[in-house]
Amino acid sequence: MRAISSGEVWQVDFGLAAKVRPALLLTSNPADEELDLVTVLLHTTSLRGHRWELSIPKPFLKPGAFHLQQIQSVPTVRLERRLGVLTEAELNQVLDALAERLAI
Image 1: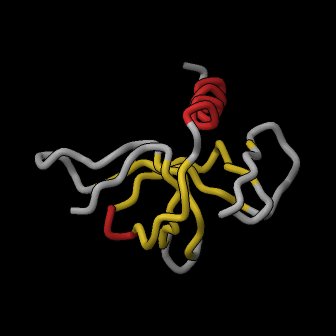
Image 2: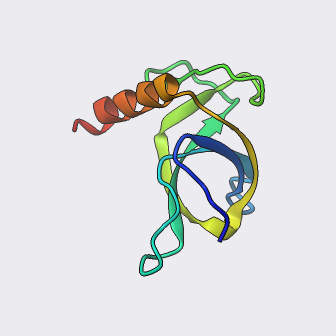
């Protein structure tokens, strides 16, 4: 299994309905005894202008936002290619926004 880390942004195949799109990895490689899944946060370019869209401009992403209502777990085989990585401060911004969204 290839090494993956939280904070990385990958092109992920979400299947026919959701297509291939960028997503932020919220979890790293699963342990051997765990399901081969990672939890991701989708990036969208179809903005609606509501509070659950978090824009973090990066040169490897089209203008858009991470959609805090679109958290999914996907098999690691659906990760197609690494696009880049968020800084620690940017990842913390995402995690803080998710904590607010999930009320935790």
